[in-house]
Length: 599
Image (cartoon, rainbow, N blue to C red; front, side):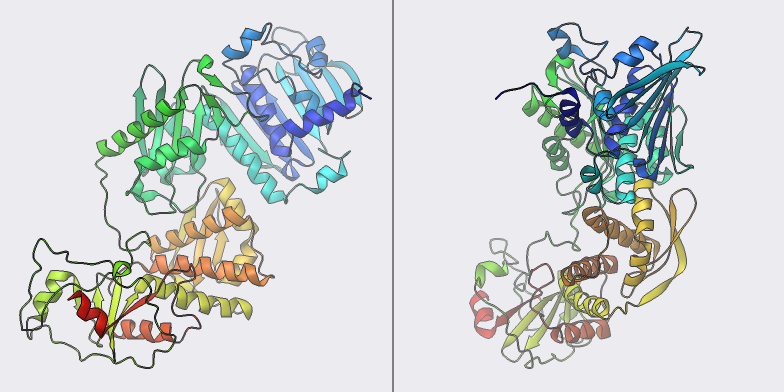
């Protein structure tokens, strides 16, 4: 039998769409304050919003009647007819927010309309209206949400850790702060100021206040105007692209939204400028007529449908490319990344005492995969025979090495571009990928240390101080003890900064290497949220991430003779020397027959 749901049940259903966690309530209340014309907004939270969420603004305020009415479903002052839905320039009519919040928490609304002598205090609980009385207060609105989900223990049980919920609140706060630099905004958590942002003169000033002054060298202006859309904002310097996502923002008409489609447009412009797996920062603002977008396709209004998506995609890519070109960023070859072609076959040269250059019509390098697609290195490498060390001044070898980027390590191992090592076998030769070999060696080393709970940390000569966003700072400090068990000695500093005093073995200790290591660590934490070393598969995943970060930290400088021989010997002593932890080949073997076939 069909029936109309009681209001208390229908409000709970709406609450499930609008209020999924404390950060959802923070978002709704912040946007209400902006829509009320506030010039100053304070957000006060306790216990990551689970105990208290309070938003205070100096906006237009409400009369006692409006304060009561705003808790009714679909109450709004912004829509009087259907056509108004397509022309809203504010955050929306908020017809579900307050009744949905009141359905899952205790809400006290204190408000005073501008020009009124007194204000009012209105109280709602999940059971409904509790009372209203006159109150003395400044003009504006002060709304307090207490004990969210206290009447729904099943819902409260599924909330994440305090640090995770706090990071979500910081994220929602940042979205509003970025798109409204003309408003003073403040965030307080458990009595401590997280952000206290005064009115900013420019968007760039607001970005630096939120992300830290270190970003000033990274930001590049982007701007274009078309009949379809206007685009403005900032993009990041390709050299500052990070492994950790988090500084990627889209806004349309002052509203934050997510879009994997437009993210691809930005990444297309950075093609060949940043390594695979890295993310450039961007803060991109779209302006278009409200009739060209639909903001109501998602309950939380974080997704937006554009009428001319394909055209905007191309305009955005062109705008970012133009900005990068204007600042003289050009593609470069980086031998330190796995996006390069796999291990190549050797160049053509003879041993008659002089270097014979290849003819233009014949390729100098032949991809190994096209020659030996089925060749697999043997698991037994006892047949390695170091070649005699060639003299750079004898038989023209010096000319070979100078011309080809190769050099002898002095240990019978040829080194090419700091990327490959070549050594002889009884029946041919073997090419080793230095980066992948390091990853395999370090992966097995770190895994042994984690299994035995015995990581080794080495101290940084000069501790490196790194400023982070509150979200990333919280992530590191929350996992500080677990990070210590991994070999990271990190100390908290003032203003969301950390001091890196020590790193696991094999990590570089110069400032650039330390920052690279922390960026990789943050990327891992942003993906997993926390460190759990109890389960074996988690230890394997962490060892793999540490090995990758340490190998990247080592760079692609040339190895000494002893380092080259030690790397090869260490690789052969690994349990699985053929492949890197990511499953890519560490080495390839060319037999005499293979060499004869390509010469």
